Length: 173
Image 1 (cartoon, rainbow, N blue to C red):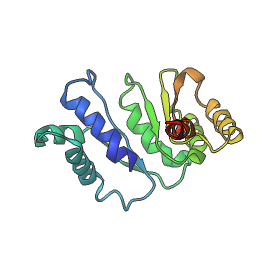
Image 2 (image 1 turned 60 degrees about the vertical axis):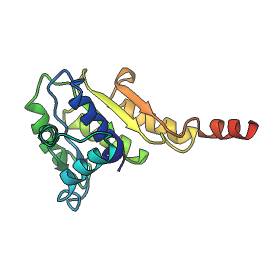
Image 3 (image 1 turned 135 degrees about the horizontal axis):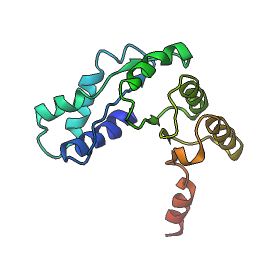
């Protein structure tokens, strides 16, 4: 849901504003083929909802052509083979893997990416969500991810990191 509400619309607006100065492809992964039927219509709907202007249908279609959807119900090497073939068609592109999944899936996904040959020195991984629910679980997640990506390849976005601090500030006001 986060990808539809925030990520795809943000990428579309960068695309429309010519802020993406390179050729690119987007390879979203879903676990269920139920979502496949409405996937592209959902992207279009969320982009239109997020726009404060009339969306150019031609630009929207050009943007949607950059997508190739993959259905991967389980994190296995065989399931990642299709992604590997698609990524291999663009050997000069930098791969950025944006994981907006439960944090318990970060390790298995990164391990599959590595075993499938999808991680190289130019690859990056963005981890979106709470990065565990305690210091112990956060360290476990980091340990698993570090087996596949070096520290300079990992970007963490934790929306809840400062939540208690901000709530306490509101009480102090």
